[in-house]
Image (cartoon, rainbow, N blue to C red; front, side, top):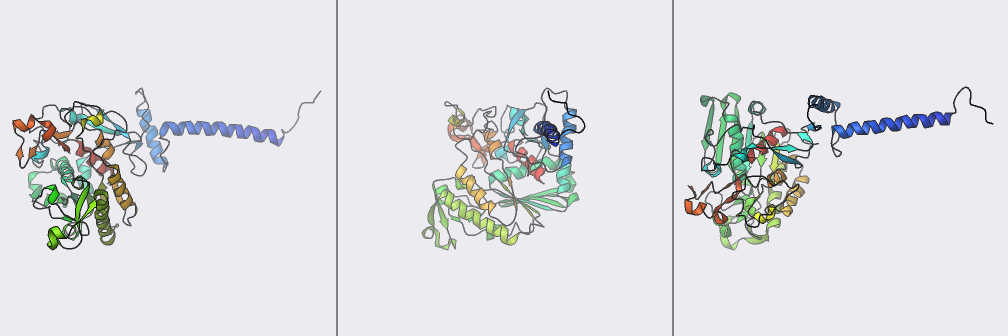
Length: 417
């Protein structure tokens, strides 16, 4: 019969016991970690974890624990989330209250009756996206010059941004100058300007002032000198370019002078031309911009919804009469070209100057309900009744109603600022 141990326990038993307690503690810690963050997020500060715990305590009455972090662009994947309907949401402006909304985007003023598209908010899976606060935005821009540059979708983001802040400023303390190429809104009390510069390709072309039909357009892929003189000196630059490149499988491109005209161009595959053009823009950024003085943003492609069969509506007429977003996770339609998106990533990843990418593509993909559709204009006039009756030909499923989806882009933009 073995005698019971007396005195001190053997070292091996103590070691096993301590390891057991350590393992249980690790499991407990991992459980807490799972409850307070998504698995792919990196933990950078105790402050944010404390904030998350506080928010969790505040939401104990909710049936589901909301464990999202406060927004951090380095940690939060803004592309992963869902659109949540909230009738209580009210836009900061309407196309009637803001005098700067183009008729092209003024859906309600142009006759749209259903307003549900205004009451959806983007909710990322992993973080809280702050509401757009116009006073915070103006303070961020105090003494600064913000320039949006790009195509008509970038213009709609600029109009959205201006409309979201201008209503807080007395009439005598703001001004707007609009032109064919350059538009400038000034908040005088803040010594701030918010500008839009029309540059649909970012690089030069023969169709910026006088819009030519697609087959006559020639893109000067090796130069941004004409446009860039209007970008120099800005404190914040926000660029986009995509939809104007998508006019065919091949594009007419030019190196050197337009003087050679039709004889001087070469036809390139669209992704190749796009890459060369973006590299020209990137070279200008790297050689000109001081990142200590200027922040640079690039907005990814805005979704086009011209094929209703993409979302399972075989008898649909593009985006016409759609009243709800697509709810299928990771939905991706045929109007967003992943090859072109890869070109953007490839160019920006090799740049010396940091560029903050506003990846609005996936969240916009779901919003088949929020386009201008038939409530828009063409050739400087509103669609007539005959054109409205033929949405298969005339519905605009590229541009967005304002207020609408571009407001969410600016919500993300301000969160980055």
